[in-house]
Image (cartoon, rainbow, N blue to C red; front, top):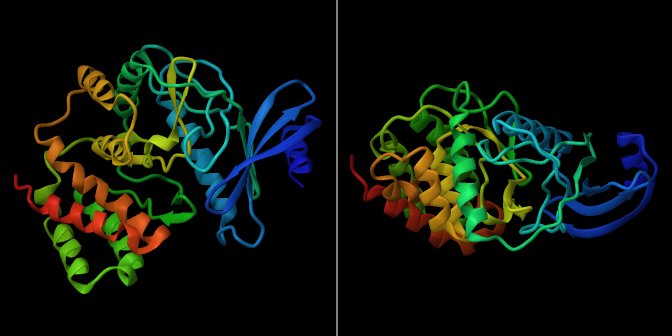
Length: 315
């Protein structure tokens, strides 16, 4: 099934396909084409994919292309060893030393498959981390027309409301926190829900100085960064116009290599507003609620702690 779909999308005979991992509602493959290219394939799992699986792949493809428009250079690459976390798709994108962080080129996408070049992964270095920080700042600075995006969003296989707006604090509260608080409520206590509602009530106060919409990845945990060729490639985006501190808070959520180097280099290009460290919990609140929805009560304490920490900030 996957070989036939690959050949249909790319118009090239397929020599072999090997399973390399799985995700929330899909299986990951490494394919070798008759012309010698190696590709990464994300294939929807029949019966377990979301109802709008075509929308999931369309959103990922649109996000990758949009991020690629903001990298300011040109380049090429391939695809890493697949999995549901670290070492995921990358390569075949654009990006120069003075440009933004590179993303994979979309070779093909339909309702059941997403195809990208294969990129061999490597251990990150301090130098690559510093380059990542600079390139991420350039990507963010490419900006967006508004907060949100013109396509329906997804994080993993879960929907995101990308309805566009000009004000980030209310957009974040209404389009990110509120929908996932409703979904996560069955894993939270009543007091937890009221606590997070207080965050939404005070969102203008807690959000910090106003910033223009940044061109952000939207799900930038360390597993969605592939290190290859001395660079950090951004993969599996939930891309949209957002607050740049969201990407940076996500990088630290599960630990990113050489994060101190990444942050220092980022600040050289586009310094962050005063108080950004204190706002990290606010930006983590939505992804932690997503984790409560995906994995249950094991993430409850982390989400509640983030809400408490966010409320301790006053501007």
